[in-house]
Length: 454
Image (cartoon, rainbow, N blue to C red; front, side, top):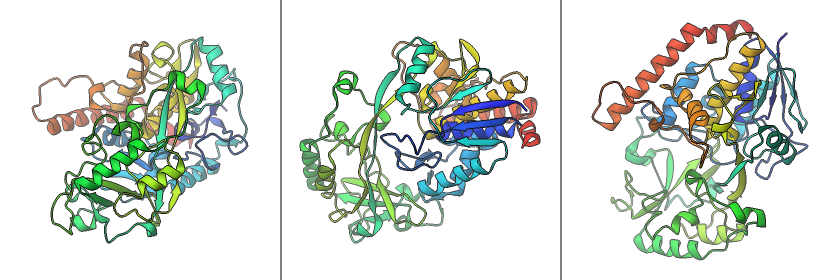
């Protein structure tokens, strides 16, 4: 039987292992946890989400939503688990993070073609197709092995996660339930029955909060971190964003548009939104509140938010150092390493940023590793699809100044004819992309091959 090795049991590695196994290969999936933990992970479950529990928009006229729909049509196992463990989040796909990771783990462990090995890999294997999906928290020995192979330094940036509070510690006499413009996951819900809890702020409360936030003490960076510290824009700590100006938060994560405080009937000056984090609705995370503040300071400052005066923190926000490859100099759009055809990279290590981007690159790498192992040609996804656009970006962008990228319509080639309105234009992009995915599935027989091998 054809064999494939996958290193790393995160989102990308789990998807890659599943895709290769579904094609009829025997897959050995290595995951170093729990024997060797990372600074951010808390469990031994595969595909553990260490930051937000949201996978972004589900709407196909939004780039993350289009990418999800493409992955569903391509038979993504991770997306199927996300859909099965979804919690209310308006037009977004958010999951119970524990149930989601348990679902992925159960699917992987239960697959007859996958052997899960709990040990750290410190060198790159040879002799068979290998997918490296060790993630942004790649261990030091593996980082050294990759650097020795590529002849290039890793780049680095910092990622931060938001705190989570117990739902029964939120003052629901202050916090009101609503989704922006009434867009709940159930369209029959009114504004007052939306998917988010909203903590409204007057201008005075907002200004006092920002002042305390700016004066709060953060965790110090270590020497090597201070030398090259820069934050990925989408995960900017809330205190860093506040330094950009007195209204930066009000026009950012605390924007009140589309919300009305039922107590006053008016739009608040600012709003802190809380999103359900588990299926039982016992935990809520502070949307957009990634932070590097010391834990005691988080309690002091975030309890100034109306409705959170007695908040109990189930998890504090924290920051960790992430790494990624200079992929344009190293990878092809098939996610093969330019210097070794049977070596693939996937996940945030490649620069496909965000949860769903990681899943997409895992699907491409796993699919292609399985095809290569079985003597078939690898697949380069069309640039007009969001999956393909991400792969083309990480393999074709300028190496100088390369930064991770989340899915966005700017990555897609222009439409053949001009479309005026943004939403209509995005819908045209989506229709074209999904038609390309359907054509690829039909012409390449990707799904049929996998089903025969499962």
